[in-house]
Length: 459
Image (cartoon, rainbow, N blue to C red; front, side, top):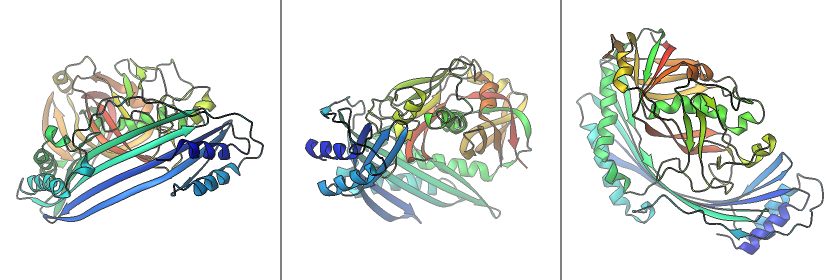
């Protein structure tokens, strides 16, 4: 994208006022989104994101800037502006850039950007009409097909030069069921770090039918009475609770400045012995996987919690300096316009030893949360509130009628301790995680598990 000669010039300019580290992040991203509503393709949007982020460190102080131009003079001007925030003289250290190729474990068979939009539209129509025609009470369907071709180059003053190409594809379908003046929504949004061969694994028809099934189920559901009770949370996107309520507190951005409930607790028990939690950016073709992070560190599989014991955090280079640690492949950013920081990749609770049927049988009265939605969390305290988008009453060990309006309310540290059964059907769901460095693709996951007691909000 930019010659090695210019990259070195920019790094030298960024170091000119005494910074001890400089980094250049170059991005070129192509994005295509096709949207359907009212039984027809409404919009086809193409977007190109191209630019450079420049960042410097001096100790634990960081300054960053960005520019959309790739011209030498504009890059040097941006580097000079970033450098102007420091006060000092550059040391005469020579920069020798040595390219490193970490390999690619995410084969792409059908590159979406080279495929006709008419073919993509036909895939989307299959999913859309499967939802639309699922039941007479489906009143409205919206659908989108996203493909992203994200190319990055990272160079720094320590001599690193590396690249990554990240291609991702995702179909999202939302269905609204309407009955007796009420509406309920269902959605399904699978995606992977793959090309259009994704739809050889996942039939668009199945995506549409799953979205509609949820909507129809919930439009016919009653309401749950709130209170404290045992809850069985299903696999896949059920892992969003760990991601939000606990995973964020294991990111160095919170830990390094003491704004995490888990700061300083390495080696201590923070969860039930049933819980092993992992962040793994190396899973082939997974939605949140990366070959290298946005600082150029190779992706890693990190065991965060092992049988309840806190083992590690997700660390970027800057917060690693504050903690006396090195980055471990956990630094991410939405684009060159954002300063990167520690973030999750594919984060999940691992399979346990309990049989799934025993988890349900163990509940005399409680809630089975089959599908989880969004929520809110305070990383400093771990307090959370999450919506159950598809739930069922459990009576005498049997899953009974569907209920709507349920939410799960608690604290991350409490829920970790209160997980007393973990099943064996690990699966992951896809999402976009927002934080200070923007919105990034992440997987969340878990097997079916039981929380012995949690506050369920209801009517």
